[in-house]
Length: 303
Image 1: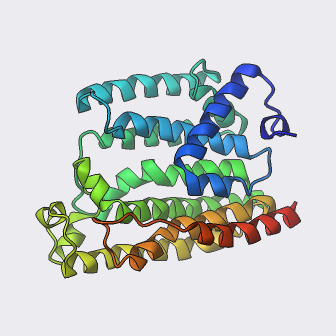
Image 2: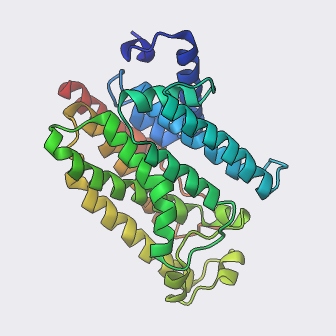
């Protein structure tokens, strides 16, 4: 039985929307997509829907090949986002991406506020080029990453209803850890987009200025600053671990694998000696297989 049928998604238009979201996930979210395959078939399409929505919005903002100005991108994002939010309230959508999202959000009673926060963060990318403190950055990462974790908890479920709130706290921390790991890996790419996501006050405490980053030459000061950021990722990951154990048994291995592989990006940064300007830290195929295979076997036993 295919994933969509297993999830009870039989309407042809809905199936098309879910498949489009899945295509975006498989193309752009290599690690995320691999972790999704560890879920029961009936859960996978709904995770694809979340990814498809997030990726589509992100592409409006970050497509470097686009000829649109930031003002035009903001208008495009706002128009599309407002339509999606309206469709979420209505409970149905004709949009090729939003149709799957609305169906998923309705089925799992995912709060609309999570999607509003995400769209707000995407809009911030078009006007904010740096953040002074971690507290300032938190507004952005809550919407761009924490809410993804919160949405996931709604879909994955917990062992008992009493575990739900604790699992949400852990999901928020893990989502932020994922995002911060990306920021560390993508310092150079983000500079190409005119942005610095590492808190400026923390960089400055290591003697790092924006001008030093823009020179794209690894210095002892930048290396020291990156080490501090990596420490935060590992702390957030460690603090999220107890919450992962609260998830439903047949979904837990997916998140454990995602945690190891996504937060493992910072391990890869260390392996390339923090040369984030000259190289892109990648999780090797061997490590993915090493993590995914045992997780797959454990997830099968949990069903």
